[in-house]
Length: 399
Image (cartoon, rainbow, N blue to C red):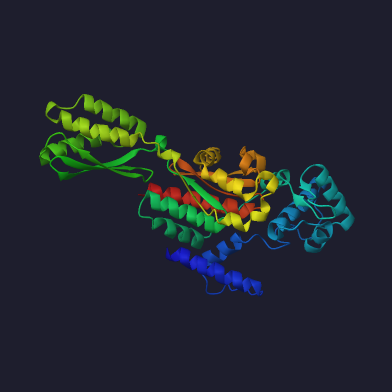
């Protein structure tokens, strides 16, 4: 994982340099520069107030600019934001009194809240939802970023390795917990069946699907077969399986066993039994989760009233919970953001889930996404989830 190692070295180096106020971007691969910037929430004053101090056209637009400034600054600083800080940091084009009045309206409408007496304001789940719904665009990946992601994923030796690399990369890009679902079997089709002779009475079956799944099974035959008989057996099963969805393939194999030639009937039944068991396994019930250590960095974001960080970890240990979160995003090219109570999971009320479907040629293989505190860099996280989903689908489709 040379690129991952380089990336981590660069992140550590840039992070250290940032402490002393330096910005070491020369002679570094553009991908790692872009990713590092994305991994760190925007500095105070960035993005919000981007209209150059010009007064916005309507009261609602102005209040949204103030909300966006509060979200941006709170994500960057983790500190409640006051009206004075907003005026100093952002060119909002209005007076301090107007900002205070607008903040009072935003608080009354439930978009921001005051965590302590005399403190500034922080976004609520409703405020984050408004912010996310009005993200007008997400920065597309550069050619260098695309090459770097593909290089990491392309190096995977099999389906398991590709999925592990995907979530590891996504966790590093977002500094959140990353999750990915194994390809859903109901959408997979059989690309190839290989039958290898181990001995006259033992065969190795290798089933490869279009989602990259590879299954190997040993079959003990009740009779010895010569090479010609094994070739006939292979051709029969290949014809019954090729290009069919797994459910259809399972039915075809069962039918083949019922109509097998007399001289190959026992061997056909032996092979069919193993193949049916292989094809009906529920691989979609498996998920890969990584990056849980990232939760420690954001431990302060998880309120004790919601169970704290431990309750989040407990929820992530339940695969059923993770699959439920990903089930809402089974669509390629569309990123879903669930904030707080929208997750409909008691232990995840203090989190946000950003997820989408991955696949190829219009077929969804499964879901992929991240789980983190509601205080999240939403534009950067959305871009990272979309990118990893796009390229993991392409890599698996090419195998």
